[in-house]
Length: 285
Image 1 (cartoon, rainbow, N blue to C red):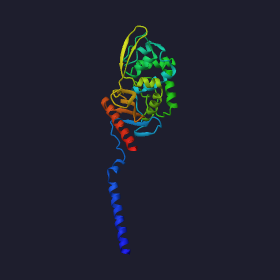
Image 2 (image 1 turned 90 degrees about the vertical axis):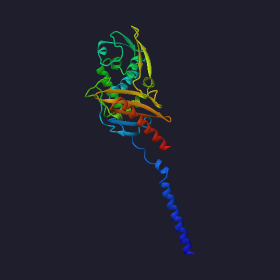
Image 3 (image 1 turned 60 degrees about the vertical axis):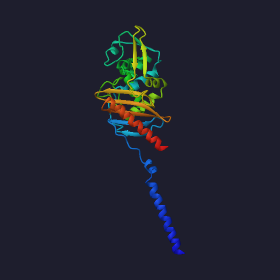
Image 4 (image 1 turned 180 degrees about the vertical axis):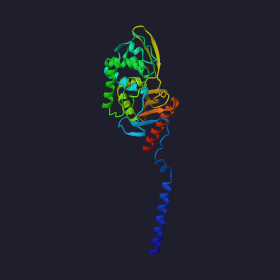
């Protein structure tokens, strides 16, 4: 009897061990493994949960980089907080001389803050950004102080603004982590959210009745499901940059890519990060 019981126990133990081996080599175990980190061309990048601030992915997230026209996220947000959309601004000589305006900047023309904001966000007009700065604070210098004060209040420790538009400057920089914080803050403003999520806009001057048709430089908007808005930026110093809000299964994420090697690469880098988000969410569920 003793030998039979012993043999039975041994058979049971072998069966249990075999079952464990089958389970640990099954597809269920493979699915439970970590989601593979995407390889991207960008110098720095981050994915941040916009509700909790939790970081899902980071690549040199605190490394200082010039942010180019992503600067305008802060500019347009401060302008929205301090002006009515219908407030008017008349173009002066200072604004008319700003490089790469991509917007009618004739001295004496008047535009609303709303149209200037669309100009700064969609075609990324540097002149519009300068106009918003002067309208808001009386001078660019005073506005830049406001920008740096706000960045500090948001918890940005690796950001410094030297201008309201993002043209190259050695003292003008941010990092992927700080950019995600700024994007979160900007997107919480309903007016700014409307600006960054608009693909096309037509504006008309208040005096000389000039019309301009604008198109958003963010090529992911309206073409990649889940992209809610954002801002692009490109200079020789900054490389190709983009900060977007991506929504998946009702949840929003700040996705920042700084210093991609080309305009196409910043889009493909972003798409890789979106796929990473989906994989992480689906794994958790």
